[in-house]
Image: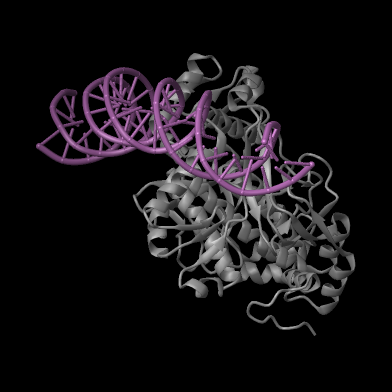
Length: 243
Length: 243
DNA sequence: CGACATGTTGAACCTCATCAACCGACGTGG
DNA sequence: CCACGTCGGTTGATGAGGTTCAACATGTCG
């Protein structure tokens, strides 16, 4: 039915869409999958575009196909805190609420598989299996959010940066295990800017920059360019991250 | 069927249990409510007792009837970070996972309505309406966790303490709106220790103590004793909290 | 080429963690 | 009954880690 994924092979947009929809309808009947496809449509957002504004009625939700979406809130003094990052196959949006307390903004150019929120909610009601999948996704996100609370609450700047790089490395490693074979060491792309990184880590660009150079001079990481990292020894990075 | 709650009236344990079960079976048929009751049993935990250990197979989950449960993780150097606080009517536990990444510990003496986790999961499968309620609860918790990320990421010590007091005040206000009528100002009990507060806010007892006395000398709060607060002017506390 | 965005580096300041002493309440045992 | 240790909380002095402000480097686009 769908082509199997071969190592290194590029996926078409519709391949990716199907893979992502399957994340929501894994154990559900094929009719659920078909209905999901029926209400889904693809859409792209330029970097910086607001996908879901905070505090306004939400019309859409969806699944990230490529790129990075940041969930943010800007506080009184103008500082922006990122409370979540969504990558390919992550769900964006908030079912069963009129307004979102946070804005979803494209951190890079983003392709998404978008649903009309009302139609998606009706589909959830009709297909408990899909709703079950969404519950599982939400529980995982909750665990991740709490992991992040741990990081923000009691880690130093160096541990924060190292932890963040590790989480990105792990994610990249999962999706494209080949990346580490090329060089013998895990390599990955950091798809966001230093300032987004700082906003996510609850610190400043300057501190992020300093910690990166510090990790670099300690030979714990190496940079091919500003956004491509190599990790020669994962265990040392893990130690820098605080476990 | 159940007695209506009158202002100031104490609830029996079974009243509370029924109220809490209803939170899970609100829109579900009465059979779901009955089945929930059938697998529920009450249990008390002494302050400090571990309700759900981290990293071990979970056997139970449940709903808090009274007291406070803290969700914690202890990191390598021995510091403890609290990633969540559960009060009466909050759900404790992690459905659909074998082990919890965090420990649930009684921060005070706690009464809970406890379910066998496997039985609870079977019930969820059988009653999509109950699972829907759990999804909504989980989504709310996710929003709360992200709100906390915001607080930890970009607020000063004073703002953290003020925000925490506000959230407790709001919670108390919702449950017992009478409390503020007695004095004309919102009054509430802070049911946890300063050290738990520090662990929740990602700071130290000393800093918490200083910020509380600072808010006190600024007449933004008043203390009847160590754990009973009065807020003469909510808007000033809100401003101290950073909005 | 100049203007602008993004990232790095340097220096000064400040918030908060740390260490230490102190206080009152409580319980225990002599 | 009082001496004592313990526990939870407050207050003080000091220093380190991180923010802030500023300059500089690099790359990109008109």
